[in-house]
Image (cartoon, rainbow, N blue to C red; front, top):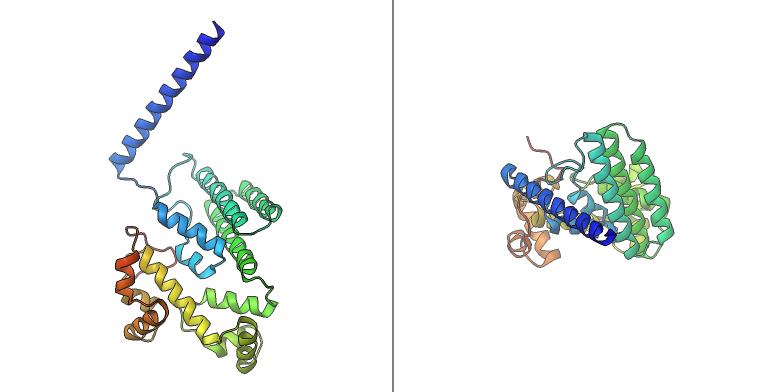
Length: 266
């Protein structure tokens, strides 16, 4: 008798689940809702794992935007659930990428506790951004196989934060209280390449991601990343990637339009 009751309960449970799923899918079809593209999501987590802060910022999407499902009808709780999912995913990607599990889980605990204490949507989004950047910077150091000096970390962060501008070595040197010649020598010694070449590489990497994961034109991207002209951008892109921006998009474009959160339009 007890076995029959258990079997009936399981059948009711599966029926309720199927009914709920059918209703949920119907509602999404009626409203035209679609989750964020899977390829973009994986590319974002992979960029965190690789420690590529520039790519992370290119693909970063604030919680609650286009493509995020409803996990709670309370707006704040909804974002909290999404952030906990994001923290869990990033933690596991970073462990897979070489971060010590105890370090990763400790960071996860810290940010989940901070999330739990948030009382506004803006506060949750701030935690989301800080958490993403923190994990990415740690993975950048792990993947490089060496520890950067404090000055070098500041230089790398400055470049990442100003990638959409024309980065002048004098301004960069001033930001870390060094002279331009000294900074250039230090950068080449510590990073193995000239500072100007590193900046170009990072701009082209960001451009490649924008071509793959957004619908912005090559001209839009060239202007946004501070290149002096579209022809110069195309020349540098072809030199580093081996393809023109148009050829690259035709070959690697994988998702429909999703405007990067950092790019503002007039």
